[in-house]
Image 1 (spheres, rainbow, N blue to C red):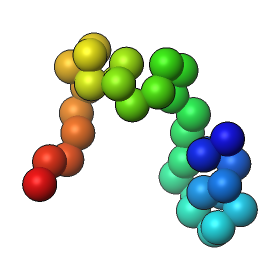
Image 2: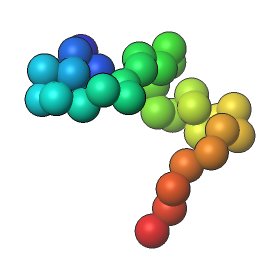
Image 3: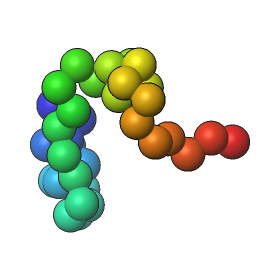
Length: 34
């Protein structure tokens, strides 16, 4: 759902992440921190 909204807002480099952001982090994939 979020990916569709981003595409509608004009973003082009958008993908849907199975399992969401928490799964992304749990698998050690890169994130930008503050």
